[in-house]
Amino acid sequence: MDSYLERFERYAKIQKWDISTWAIALSALLSGKALDVYARMNSNDAIDYAKVKAALLKRYNLTEDGFRLKFRTSRPEPDENPGQFITRLGSYVDRWIARVIRRVHVGVGKDWPITDLSFKFFFF
Image (tube, rainbow, N blue to C red; front, side, top):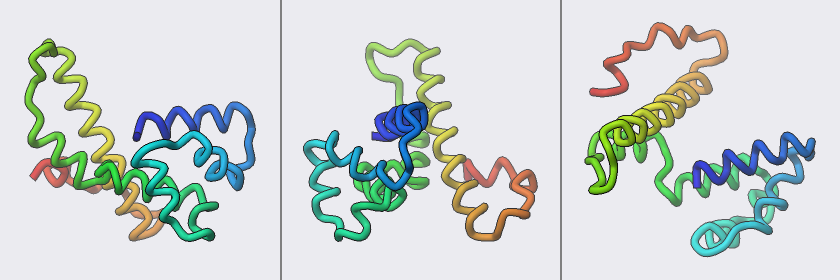
């Protein structure tokens, strides 16, 4: 779902869609569990792309805690070579840290020096 939303956002930007139309456009493409999440949202939230995206990410556990857990519990797949496994782990870490930084940045304001975060904070 994370990759799907990323692709949708890229396409919407390239097409120069107004962000106010993104939630409705996305809803037409959803199916299965994702469509259920959308259908259960109230009418005001269902037209707000940020709220739709947040609800979908939460449903698929693509949150800060979800990516932390994926990173810490991942094991190589049977058909995965070491390079692929490392790339997958790196992807989990990148998405985990991005969500931590977004949360911290929103929580304390735009002028907070993100570089002051200890790298160990993310892993322990």
